[in-house]
Image (cartoon, rainbow, N blue to C red; front, side):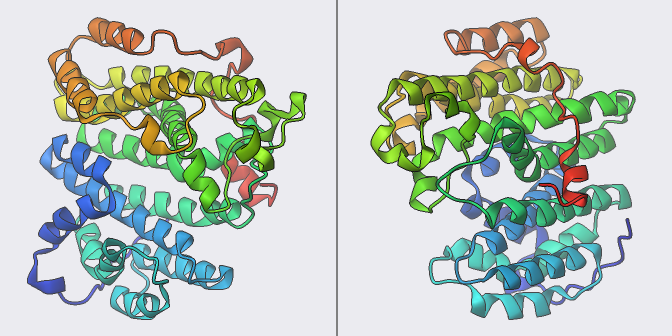
Length: 372
């Protein structure tokens, strides 16, 4: 992978680059604006920058004002910018006028500030930049393959769901693992193990979000649920609006909750590899896991929900999760007990039903072979 020096133009709105990055983050992600600041300062800067790069890729893909050809062009140009091969100011000037009126103001601001974000990227070490570049390249290749054939009919099966989760979340877990190992060289001997577990971590978080956002996705003519989970009873996902109160849907939802639950248990295994003295990284991971488990509890208790607002975690629960994990941060035994308590009553997929966390053929291999 070739990563070159980046030419990115003038400072935006007289803000320093890092100040701009810190200012824009809450507008494009409340969750990451909460969790990233608990990381060690240098690592927080890199992870915040990585998130903004991913958000820029998402903005291109999600914008209804761009056709597929334009999205492909801007994705490729964006990858070249991250590599240091194209000017970011020109990219912003070309993209901004084409964005739909439905694009959020903060997303427009982020596109306008691409040069500032890239300047921050250029200040990182070569190893850090290579991790970020790889993540953006894979997202910009894999994500469109799913977005452009999305429909209310859903995905084919759980393998296809795993592929989708890899390109939007699993690859981010791989990138974070690389960054954690740079920050804490003590993790390097267990890097391969962590890279494997990171895929499951990403799947658990992404599947939880998919289940929570079922109805909002349907408003966008999209469904990421796997048809195979419902196919035995001839349940048609295209008719979910009429049939979601059925026992078949509840059983299918519980099966997917069980899969997400198993992945989150693996996510805890991943987190406990991190030394207890790395409090910031542990908090970053544990808060995400805890909030996901509480969301699964809400989904399990309210299978007839019709909006993500109905399964939204309360601020009180968020504060309790933060308090409990911070209090028990250094005790692996207590953290496992706390997880089990929070997840009590949730369905759990048997490990025997999917013994290998990785697909037989990796999503990247299928993408390269044109078989996604």
